[in-house]
Image 1 (cartoon, rainbow, N blue to C red):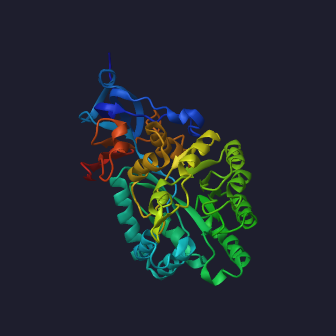
Image 2: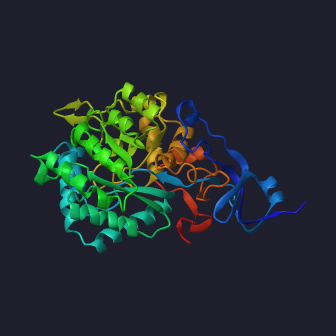
Length: 432
């Protein structure tokens, strides 16, 4: 029997999890299933997956230029992070302490964003791009191979466009997908005339569309009304941009319903989105993206000691939210929401671990939501997010033998090796 030539054959994995499924993602009960291949192997040619299966079988079928031993470790697809705010300046660690202790003045989400905006406007291109490069390196070492990156810390035409241009200039192993988020929150200078700011956001859309794949709007009590977001979204659609929505994070602003109306790729947060709006999202093909790292960092499920008593946490319902989004029929994904205020984490591993501890999601749900479903929300489910023949060979080898161990453990990086398009870029948790 003549063997087929391949560039790479990864063999002897204790488990291979493919996270396979339809390009539009796994919805409903299907997200709760994961079928590990024991003593697994993966064959790669020309940067794409050729086959996934049993090690003995694939060794008999393929002759590789390179045989890479997984040494009894877990092999998975690369992780996909579908919501981040990559480019910004400054650190808001000082304001966070007030939230933790209940002492001092909590800047709140909108107030904190204004601080980041001031620093970002003042930062040089070199400062912004250097920090982004370091952050992307850290993400890659922790297993992320594709990332969506929003603007939103400029909130004026010059800086928003500059952030988009800088995002497009990034050359990294991680695929970075740019999103224009001019409508993040109203900037200080437009707090009394948000409609005028919305017009400014719309005016920039033709230029933004040259650099962005998506337009995001914040349909939330701290952001913009559904009418204002609708105006922006319709103009963006006319220019060929996909739509994403920050929806209902601090209250029900009809963000989820608007996302369904606009046929948005995703509605993100959906903390206060009612069931009927989640069902409308599912019918429209709009995914829901959840952020356990935000819940963790904002202490949304932690009571606050106050005057000898415990003040109830603001969002004890987050496990119910996760269950409601799945039961609605939505494709559900997880993300870091990496940003300087509400979620300063670069690690999708951390998100996966918190998804179990805070949202009570199971291992299969978490893996599927961090790979195929996350890729699907970015319109990449046909080419990324799973170890499926024909897809790009973004592959992680972990320092543990079973997929549940990645989520059961916490506080350390469990990635050993990372392959991007079939090329090894991380070797023993260091750049190859």
